Image (cartoon, rainbow, N blue to C red):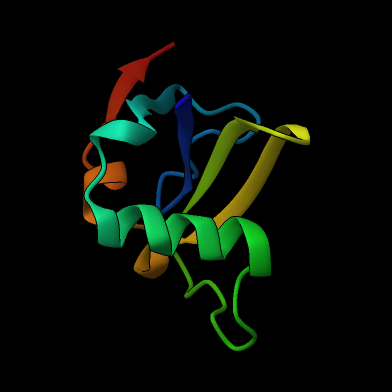
Length: 95
């Protein structure tokens, strides 16, 4: 299985946006996720973010990219739908 590349965006500081001095990124192997997390992730890629799962003001969203059968696929997900193992793989860095 491939790796996931994760970017955390938004929040009060507007991380990852234009002019931001902080970038939050991570990488985790799909094989390192538990079965429930893999299922949740697959559902997000296959079905998209459920309607009504909008992003709350000043909350984070995660841009998750994977290599799959269709090539590179990227989704943006509100933080409340991101499995903890994926969120915990992200580290902040000053740019």
